[in-house]
Image 1 (cartoon, rainbow, N blue to C red):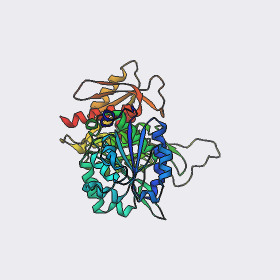
Image 2 (cartoon, rainbow, N blue to C red; image 1 turned 60 degrees about the vertical axis):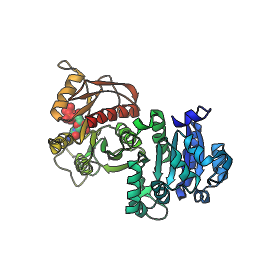
Image 3 (spheres, rainbow, N blue to C red; image 1 turned 45 degrees about the horizontal axis):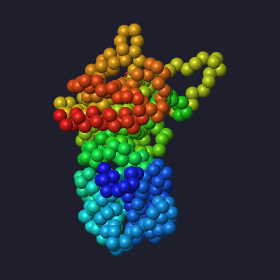
Length: 416
Ligand code: CTP
């Protein structure tokens, strides 16, 4: 790691850049998360950032002196040293102005100079008004930065300063931290950003098929594995859309989230997002059946106490549909998930292989749920099977670890 070679302090060295937006106050929480988990943090605010949160706050929270100009502490050549010693640079919030300066290689203050001298992974967490985020100038700057291997997180969608809402909010500090921790954990910068330039779609959660305005057929999928796939892909540099069916979790940083309810909604959102992408990972559990009719009014109990008749129809199979849509092309790489149990006729893997053939996808991530594995756990244990290679058993680990193992396999398919 770049920083570890140049400093005696064995803690990972993080530079927290803060540019001048109202979301600068949220960087205080990000800073606390880094320091409390054993990171050495140098805060580099811009002059404008100091108008929102002052030097005293950054120094107290980081336990270190804070400078924003290249003329502070000239003898130690700080404008070069800070970047050289870093294991990771994260800028949160990154304003439109900061993105423009970074894309153009300007180095008029300590933060932009640090971005030029850093050879470690760089994460930018933009926050600005929707109009600024969507302006062609900002789009070009983001593209330029991403093409150079900078992780530019998608801003979150929601309430902005003032009355307006839209994409432009700073992702939650906990999610920015998780992304940075993931990058530091994986080390080597080249391998870390191996999804740069790739566009991927992940589905997550479980769909609901309504019988009437208040009741539905659903399942217990929490969406944790799908969100872990989305978060890790973003941390490895991909542009990610996650289609989330009834997921009640904090949105991963740097990911576009489309919320849906039913299998039909999921199908149209995935198909729309999957246009010209490099991979689609179907981690969602779509309902296999839906009521033939959705009643407009709540179904009432009958006076003769007879249960209502329910007529169900099969929903469409999205994964099989994507395989058909792809035709003879090798992209996108298509990945399915399968929770299976073994029985008298066949083992878990036999059932999974039959499913892989039936669905026609490239990879199937197989989960043995026979031993009572529960939906919603933070950990997972899977075997990844493919049409073209040996099975890859993934040892028990966090859902983020499993997600990385899945992306490793997808990267191999892209390479061939
Ligand atoms: N899947 C899908 N569309 C459906 C059902 C499932 O795209 N209507 C996807 C899931 O997201 C998953 C994979 O197919 O990636 C396997 O899901 P699973 O429920 O195991 O498949 P089924 O075909 O429904 O098989 P089973 O009869 O075992 O439930």
